[in-house]
Length: 451
Image (tube, rainbow, N blue to C red; front, side, top):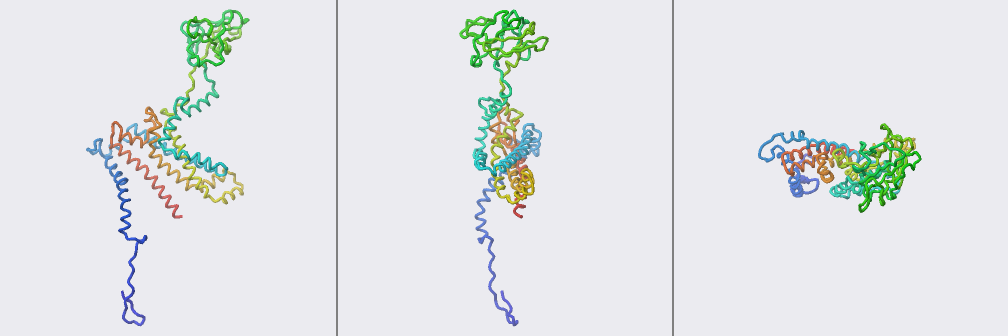
């Protein structure tokens, strides 16, 4: 290249132009060499499986015949798969929202207390547990037997605190006893009672270990000993080792302490009493001519708690285990965002007369909105592919009721009647459900970077 002189003389050659380098200062072929392994892995592990799944979703079970959209139609017509779709919708709406709200509450409430760090550590600890381990833990927690399942142990304990449990759950009379079934689980005397004849209420079927610890030896009442009152004895008509006589209080037989006794006339209770330690009881003279009844409350089965893994509660129960794991994750991210909130804004609002709820609702939450959005979107993507907890916690009898798309994908692809066409269609559906959430998240991140 040549340039002209100021006097208009002949041009002389200028310095040669420098070749422009890439931004990184390296040759493009070197950069491509470094990117190639990553691109190969991306294609082999992401692009190819997606493409093959889309292709396979249009073929039948054997993979040899073209099925068109039949596999996609089956997703929304098969009852089992449709239940999975509905449950996934419940998961996406409930689990991320509850986890985020709890994380926000924990982060805000522990911000200004001395032991807040220890509390956050405890709440975050479940994140260190794998989904498999958490599923096993909560499968035991939700056991129906209160002696094994922690949830029902607590529930039964609270219930029994306010509702007295029956002492003689399996007690019943023998056919030769002076009692008969009275309906609703109760027992009544076969004949009306009178003051001159003691009432005999013998029962069997109570294991010795279930008898009240302070129940004493049964005592027979003497005829006419009640001075016009109705007297009698309720006892366990069983002699250890045998040899006892039916309908007779034998030595070694124990009274049914605390059993409730009622006098009934024309269907109405006119008097009631509870048996003493020796099984004896006394009713007023107004009970003359009535039938004595042992109400059903004496014999009802013990309360065994809630069927957490039954068809109606299995999905909420599993969501509860998920929240237990991921509320700590939400709390840590929100607490990090809360630490960046300008304190002068909060103090200025308090000085202007705002109470703590107003500061939280009008200042803290709006400033934390970007962080809350990150947590919410992350958890939504996470629950769309939930599999481990549902597969482990839900028993076989309730697995159809707790079904989700990721679990149905596994069952359709690798079950006894595997249909890879339907399994691939479910995989494509999951991908389509995740893409809008990811798109919203990417747009939000770019908007934040542009500020």
